[in-house]
Image (cartoon, rainbow, N blue to C red):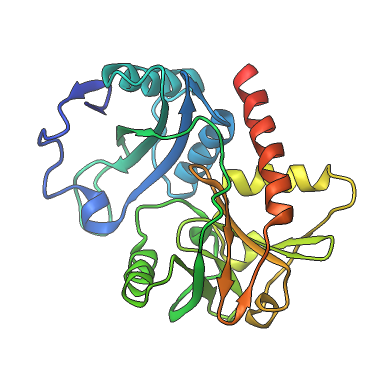
Length: 284
């Protein structure tokens, strides 16, 4: 079952028309959130990111779009799919309503909530091979729009095709100044000695929720130093570890980039702290 503007429909129902602005112009935002046993991890952070993004895109925020309302709609959708006792991936998509060409006829919005089951209630660091390569055919722009979670992800789609065609697990994306920004599906962290570095939002990386939480964890961990600074491609092979973060997988270690093989000692220490932070968000 999917939730369309508060009403529940079968997954194969026809809900959207050919005039949907998310389809025609990428005029949509989405939040991917993780829910365990009826509790949405870091929900306040996701909610406020969505509200800020809607304001930036000049979408009209409905009066009923409160923190509590959207959380209840998410839980209603989970229950309708009999996933209340499971770990669940939720995608909440908000799009401007039909009408207009580039200039919309209205700034009013609709929403769709989709759910799917996850294997584990905890963030687990997968050990296996995870090789990446730089994707340099197209570049991420260094602007605020690149930091938003919009449905306009064609660069990431093309990079995914490149990775699949060449046998890579993922690709690292660069901006138009050739700085490494992020991966296809998450934020990037680089470890060198006791310093953990991640690109700043001004370089064009996604304003990720797990990025934010991990930065808080690193800053509070004795013996680790956080740097929010640009990363050049030359730094990648000189680092001790590279890892990717997002809301669903938590932390994914990169095992290989070109000829360099990486460890994951720091990533292993951080995934436990991330799980602890998620449990605190559940308790609250």
